[in-house]
Amino acid sequence: MAALTFITPDWPAPVNVKALQTTRNGGVSTGVYASLNLGDHVKDHPQHVAANRQLLSGYLPSEPVWLNQVHGVRVIDAALSSCLESADASFATRKQVVCVTMTADCLPVLLCDQAGTAVAAIHAGWRSLCDGVIEATVAAMPVQASQLMAWLGPAIGPEAFEVGSEVRAQFMAQDAQAELAFQPKGDKWLGDLYAIARQRLQTLGITQVYGGGRCTFNEPENFFSYRRDGDTGRMGCFIWLE
Image 1 (cartoon, helix red, strand yellow):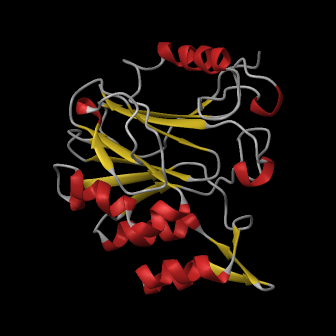
Image 2: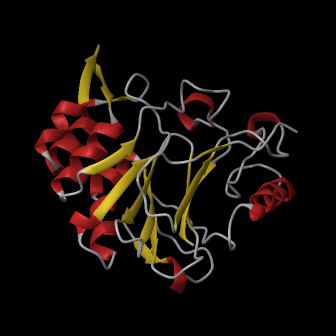
């Protein structure tokens, strides 16, 4: 079994804000799910997923509040969550409540405030990003947007995220500046999820934005990628207040 490897967000978060992003390495899953698959909604063996999640227990203060992610904009208070709610973001103000988002090309976004009183984890797939999941999460958090900072985890990069004109049009219908995040490629477009997220955060008044730049599609040794592989596992991005 390969060593468990994490990415630790490089951002000036308060000392009581803890966060980590898994890679695909360090678990027990095999085949296309090798090896640290955390998604129980894919076709991996349930016992392997449970064992992989158990491997994280030494690094987290409590069981993460897992979501049934549906590419929407619903946001929940993780401390009040019932079992496996359908939502694409969660926030926490209570200590040791772990917010998590699972991805395999979609963009994980973490938020915290400068005072270390609130955190959030957002599943920003292109649909939910377009429809306003970042905005909905910021609105749900009991702090001012200007007090927040963001970290963008590994997602499909701008050289690999090829979409049709209809996807570009949907983004531009929501926010005209999204035009700057698309480059032509034949009759398709290459979209930059990181750039769109930064635009949306900037519009909300969130100027401290870190991370971005990794590409799940182009790093098969480190990351699962749905666009690259189809059947594949999921990474987890976790945040909590100590």
